[in-house]
Length: 338
Image 1 (spheres, helix red, strand yellow):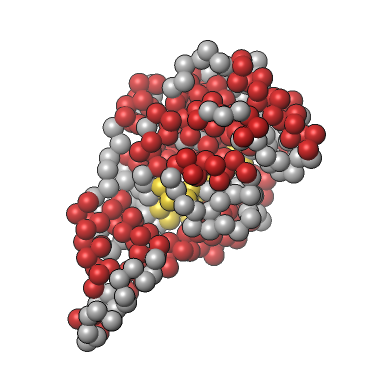
Image 2 (cartoon, helix red, strand yellow):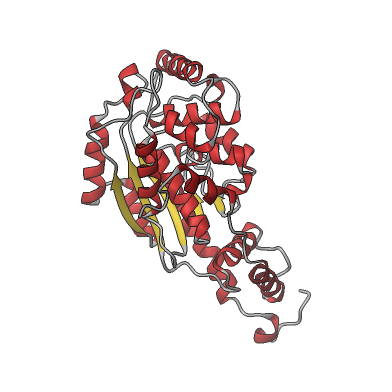
């Protein structure tokens, strides 16, 4: 049976999200206070360790089973000239992921993350959302459930990534519909559009917002009308991770936009998430500010694939190494209060 077998099942999942383990967090804070360093001297590394403790439910959290998943989908709106690349590139990049030749392959290997790839009906793009919902109800539920199926109990960290020509257009449309603001506030050059291309992209999103203006503004309806299969799959994976208390390391604009419609209704959806980095795409900084998440890295990256979050996973590893491997004052025979 699908994880999200109905719209009601999806709505129920986001209405009843578990909270972190406050006892584990308190124990982790207590351990931090005893480690051989001045209080707070490791800055955000301390915060990350406590965050991970809360979601894993252990005073000493771990990162032994970290999983990155690249979700791939194609978008009918590309017929409107919103991307610098043709939809065929999605197929080609999926083959590259599977052959081990993409950036995300190298970065996951460096970070010690298991990488999986899920291509979602690449030969059947979503509908052009300027004139129809991108997905039917059943298509959206299938995508949500496919994403959820990539997450299992016992994972220590989830890194969602994506590949889909045209998906920065969908991401900007989702943000504008869910969080307000004109299309121009959320649109950027994506994979390299010139100013004329950016203007065309804004026009396409404005047309989509008008078409869907009277549609219900629920998370599900916004995702199915303006999203894509890979975007809905990321949303499903992130919600399922919350159900299983698996912490999530968010990647760029598209990854974050996948949960923007959920955030608009249930802001607590980001509580189990860390922002891995801030994309160069201008809408991402604005979106992270709305989420209240400070990125771990700002490297000018805009590739997608989960690449920025994969790099940030090494910071999480460092945080846990310091938390778990440092001696306490008592163990080291060092006077407290240095």
